[in-house]
Amino acid sequence: HPIISMPFSAGARKCPGYRVASLEVRAVLASILTHWRVGLAEPGTRDAPLEYHLGTTIAPRMPRLTYEPLTPLAEAALAAAEQASACE
Image 1 (cartoon, helix red, strand yellow):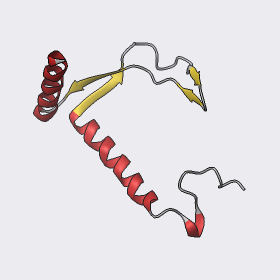
Image 2: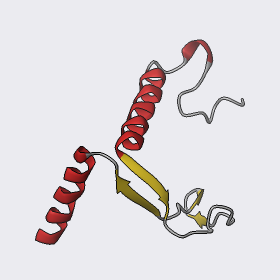
Image 3: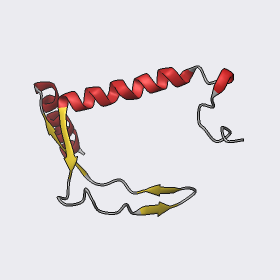
Image 4: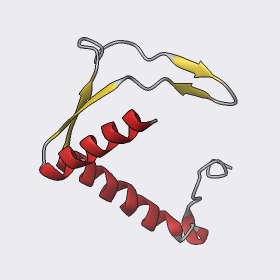
């Protein structure tokens, strides 16, 4: 059956948490993109082919990202994270 491998199923017996999970992902992404500028760390990697990691499943390796605070809230979070890493 084509739907058997879908994480939330489909049709009449669809998982009730699907809609909530979908909305949470959108809310988190909107919050991150509102407070941070996110980009690729290495210039010219946008068109580079994906590298894959073979484990239990085959998954692409994530590219390194850079982030820059856009709001005072993000700057405070970055300063707190840097201070916490300095204490370790």
